[in-house]
Amino acid sequence: MVKRVATIDIVEVDTETVEKHVSLRGAYVFYIKLSAKPEREWVDIFNFEWRRYQHVLKRQIRVVGDRLRLVCGVDDNIQNHVALAEKLVKKTNARVEEDNRRIELMERRIRGGREVVEKEKDKIRRKLREMSEQ
Figure 1 (cartoon, rainbow, N blue to C red):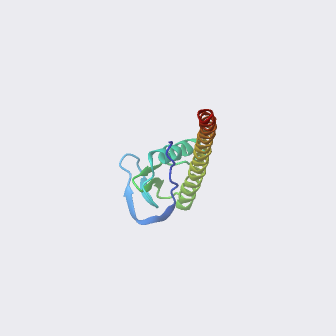
Figure 2: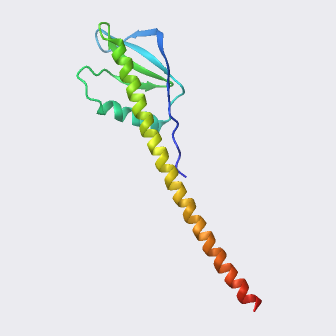
Figure 3: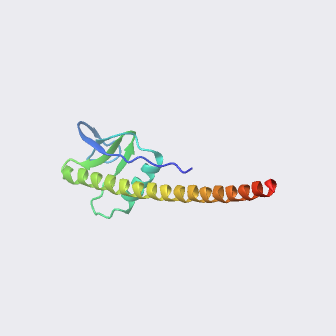
């Protein structure tokens, strides 16, 4: 059985934790709290969506535990960073939900196939019983 992946929501922007970025001059880090620590599959999809996103001023965003870690400059439009994070979470969840639907369909087909096999086995058993009663 293939594992379904849980979707993740943004809970809030951490307005208190702001850190100086250690390797980028003039850059800072802030965090967005998530509803839970995402599973590895969710993180992989999130990272894929982030890499796909085309924008000149794209800054680093990554998942750290149950938070998103965003890099910004002091003069950056922080709202744009938060909006991008929201967009990426939404796209990630949409892909996760689609994957979960595919898993459900696959499992239904497998269950349906098993039911057909069981019905055919029952039919053969009935014929065998009928033969043995004669």
